[in-house]
Length: 446
Ligand code: S3P
Image (cartoon, rainbow, N blue to C red; front, side, top):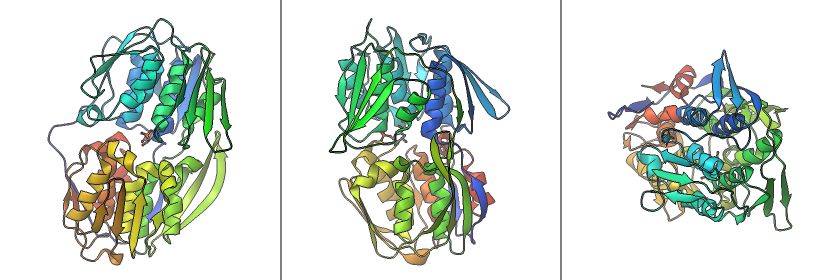
């Protein structure tokens, strides 16, 4: 799965109205956790709808390297887990490629084991901060050996004989940090507590309970969540149907909004309220998006989204909405480039430590394509041009970031001139079907 050193550019051109019905691949967050928790739990876990993107496959390989059996039969993944507390020391470094979620959650999962585990990744992952996960793990007794400067990968963890439970207040809005501490708590005697001042995606809490963990969530008068997990309990295999990824759905959604005359339905999209910030914002911008057939599937809300070409207007996105749409700002910025007036996005400091510095990458990409925008320390203001007049004609540096590549390809579908991205390869990390799905709706991308 290593990527060729030769980049593979892609160009999107102004397209006629997009039409049709599509399903986006399974949610990335839930897919990672399905492999991890299934690999850890006793007995069999069966998964349908799994995202078969490179990031998730790396997590699967890591779980196999630590003793889980994972096989695909037809459309179903079947896992025989090792049992909580029974992961084996991997014989070789675990290579997480581009995946922040896979690597950070796995550091939590195995850090408290009395064994050595080495984590490696690609250039993007090796540039990302890991101290946010390593610091609470250190408090639990985990030693960090051979980390690259600034607590970066490659690094090796060595767990204690017995880990110490902690109470940890998560200092930034990060589901990965929250999850890493909770997963470390699974192999720690007693109660590990995570205090979460700003709620982030809650898939770890929901799924761990589904697997049988003794986990309680209490929200205090200030809205701060106190999540307590009892360690060393039994986890049992589950049957999981992974819903469509709302972060991936954002690309055809915005494409259909900005290409005039479009009418697209995206089926079976996860509607967990910790993930619907983009939908809400696009509706506030005047986007014609209907939420159809809302239903519950396997403990999560899902729905079909019907979206039609719309005249958008700029809005100020409330800063406290950032955690529920953190991965969607690149494509929101593209929508804003076609809206009338200014769209202001704030509280974006976490965007600087994603697969790339997404705030800078988006601003540079917009500028290269004639969009008037202002990059602040943790904000972005975009002044749009309805109809895309004068936009496009630029090449965007994607910096090994799948969402930068997909967002700017969406831009090219409605801009006056084509938009080129310097490398399409990373799209396979989260949305391998992107090109086929988009061209199937009528998008001109090659
Ligand atoms: C994720 C959490 C978010 C998000 C990432 C997936 C998860 O990261 O950006 O794509 O599955 O827990 P942070 O925890 O760094 O915000």
